[in-house]
Length: 253
Image (cartoon, rainbow, N blue to C red; front, side):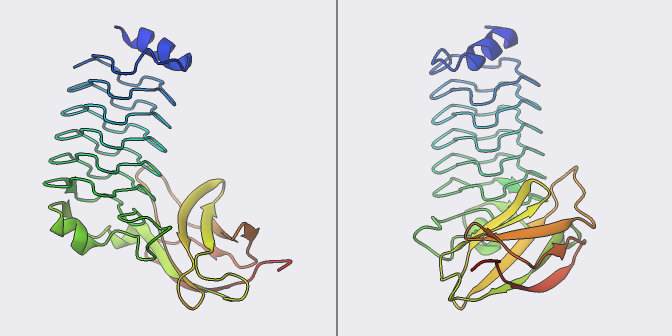
């Protein structure tokens, strides 16, 4: 099967790629948004720079595949075999990697904003210079301590370190607990891009960390917030290594 044939099947939104046997195929730069590769065999495939936004890759075999700089936002990778895969610079924002095998995969400089890493095999996974902050190691619906920590990633066998501080802006937002009780969703955006999402914790506080992904510049840009779906009055300006304390109040509440 050629790259063009795969793109055509993906565009039709049919199941022609489910369980497909495509080892080593060249899909570099392919346009495959929402493609259904459920249980497909893609070991050793070249998917460098591919558009896989929202792709279904559940239980797919991508062992040894090259996914460097691929766009995997919102991709479903539950139970996928990504052992030894090259994911350097890949965008895995909001991707689901529950029970996936990332052993010995290289995710250096990848972006994992709110990616779900529940019960993921991270043995020997390279997370050096990876923006794993705000990745979920637990379900936020059931555990308020859902964000991954450096200690647990290292305990799981990953080669992880803290994200380089110059690419980080952090702070604490104080929110009236009467207006936004524990569990209320708070979303931070820069322009039209969601850059952080979490829930109000005990006492109406919200700790946020906004990391600048590779190849982008947030310097001097305004950060706006939504609390439970309502736009907050307070805003912040992103600066490298900056910190801030905000008192968020939402209009009409």
